[in-house]
Amino acid sequence: MPTLDWIGKQAVLNHHREVPYHLLKCDRKLSAGDPDSGNLLVQGDNLLALKALLPYYAGQVKCIYIDPPYNIGNEKWIYNDAVNSPEIRAWLGKVVGAEAEDLSRHDKWLCMMYPRLTLLRQFLADDGAIFISIGKDELGHLRILCDEIFGPRNLIEVFVWNTEGHTENQERVTSVHEYVLAYEKKPDAAMFRDIVDPNVPEHSKIRRSFAENSITKNGPGNPASMITLPEGFPCQADDLAMPQFERFDEFEAEVETLGYITRPLTAKYSATYPLRKDDLIVRNHRVVQPCRVYAGWASAKKLRAFIEGGCKPLDDNGTQLSYYLSDRGVIYYRRENRVSRYVQTVLRGMGTTERNRYAIEAMGVHFTYPKPVELIAYLLSLVTAGDDIVMDSFIGSGTTAHATLLLNQQDGGHRRFIGIELEPQIAREALQRRLAALAQGYKVLRGQGKGRHIPGTGFAFSYSTLGEALFDEQGQIRSEVKFSDLAAHVFFTETGTPIPKRASGKTPLLGVHNDRAVCLLFNGVLGDRTVNGGNVLTGPVLNSLPPHDGPRVIYGEGCRLGKARLKREGVVFKQIPYEIKVT
View: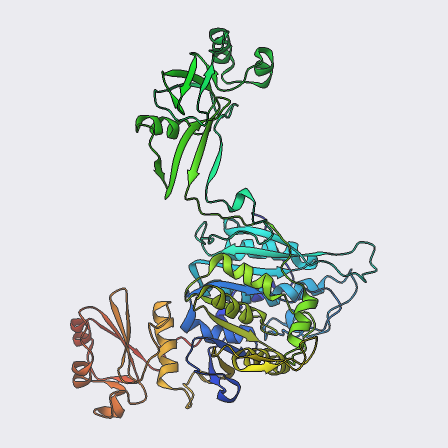
């Protein structure tokens, strides 16, 4: 597999592990509706925000869409990781070079993307998928980078999005497309839903609930064989009489020598398929006497099973499969109850950046290059349904959240979204304003509908910012850390999975993973009944813990029990804060 190297790669390979866990602080004034609705906006560096969210959502996200910077060479860089390598510190945060020869901007972009993509992969469910919009400048680098992080076998497709171009573009070649890379967490695990590309006409065969075609298929992969059509085999024609092929034995002998039916052989004998070794007679849409036919077949086994079953439809993966003769004596298959599915590699007619910019300006939101809602909604629709979680760690003006809401309105789903935006101004004046307008309603501010009131949808979201790290520079737990915050961190770092449900602080039992219970004695969770408010593991504290028939890991500030008692009780004790992983 090709690998990619760049200046600073070694420093960022494990950088995601060194990022500390931070607290999230909900700003209720900027939230809408119930803050516990499951929809979440986070303002802050997405690397820190992703690490803060990991204990709650690792392995839970069905679909990730991101639209990272395209790195076109004329922008200031805003993603400045605190990477310790002096080599990287010397140029991270500087203005990206505009000259095409200055490749340092690509190194910088890769250093920014690698740890973020690595963390994003940890959020994906086993059957999850990620879609990444990108331009030509970093397409090649991103493909190899994703092959390294997600695995080359997990590439679903490189989609081409037709942006419909820019009519005033004065370049030598007008660019009318961008790219969307799609990867999945595990090979062939992301199940695409039954979606038909919206550009497919309504009358297209693709949209039909059935499919039919000839099963004749001559070639090296389909050696010719004889099949006997029995009395009663169905036919499209009411009456049909076709004589046997006169030179059948001569033709068959040549096929056996060659191994399969070739085009020159077909031309030599002026053959049409299937060849008949007997006369074919049809009355009232049924074959009236057995007829042997000869050809290469696309599905000989299924045809024989159909015949052996009395020419009754076969149940084939939820569809009804049958066979029949056409009025020209050709054998066709017909598959009923087929579910239409057709996803093209070229994405057309899915909105434009310009139209979406005008649409959000009507809400009082100004954002230069918002992706079309239609595009992202289509991508999300391919793999999400029900209450799936959608994530966007470069959410910008909030188009991914808007697309999630739109899909829910269309199909009655309850998808939830998680969005992260670095820039405070964008987060408040574009992202929050746009979603608040959708939630609560707004008056149209531009266009032909100016002054018209658009009612709100009533959906809710929580707006949060990044707080302090859970641990200070000395590795001590900060005083403002709540039981629920530490509980989520402890359970995740202990088990590698999110806490089953947010800790209430009413019980020290956080959850059970692989038959192992995880308990936390912190902030007087046991109500001051014992030493130090129940933060120390003693005999009475152990007896008061929720019963569990299996091993237990108990975190606490101290332990008064001996090794023999702990072993007998199946308890592993870990001292707070020294035995809690801080990154």
